[in-house]
Image (cartoon, rainbow, N blue to C red):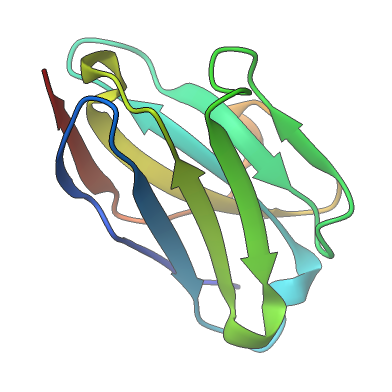
Length: 123
């Protein structure tokens, strides 16, 4: 089992960047696929990107492919989401999630979730 905690959210202006961190407890962190999702008020949870255990496989949603990047440091039990050129429509609660096995892009395929971090982009 793994416990996930997001950090790094905040308020930025349009065009600026944010880097979110997803820190995990447990000694088997490198067994887990980690994904990032977001949810804005009144919308469904949206897949953003995911990374396999060693960073060798990454999938990104087309909507953020040019601006968002995922990476991981297994020695630090942390996965990062670098978000650049932010827009007001990127305002949402950002979640990291974990699962064993292969890469997945559906939220229901993830078993472990963090509490979420608010990211707000002002115009």
